Length: 122
Image: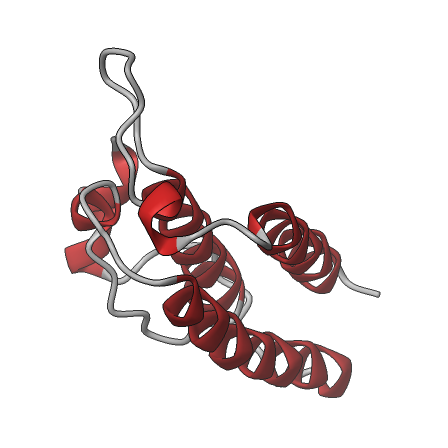
């Protein structure tokens, strides 16, 4: 198993584990701000984990352009169902990336597309 595939596998597991921890929480709780300065909602954190996984695995290791607004992830709000739909899409995309790695057809350069470079350096 190549390094990119291992990376994809670990990040996919983290994403699954995060959603498992959020099971049973209402959408209200997922979007409730914490009573601490400079914190994120659980929904925003889950969205950021999803965006980060997609960027690092699909774009950086897989060479596939990912449309991501990192800063907006921290302001995101929505329903648990939205996170589940995104996870299903991401699982399919990660599976495709892992299949490409086994076939030797995925990208090898770990450089973001030029318009993402500044966004991910922060």
